[in-house]
Length: 91
Image (cartoon, rainbow, N blue to C red; front, side, top):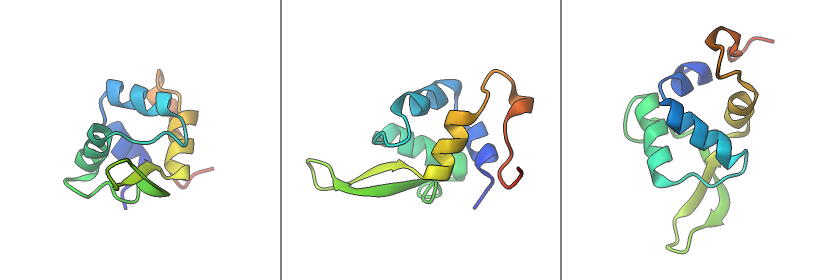
């Protein structure tokens, strides 16, 4: 799996803002799942950055949320200073 910073760095500022606004347990709408897939390399490539939360939608599909470490990275990143973004695996 690619570095969290690399994958999220390929999202648009608007997509990042929307992900931040959803919070750590916000259900990902289809367009954000597609954006994560695109950023990770193509259809289905974002699996692992988002995970099912155990619930299903009204249509029976799984509700997806950001994986906890991805959400933590996103919510703790300093979006105005790319040099201050934490790198996955460093403390």
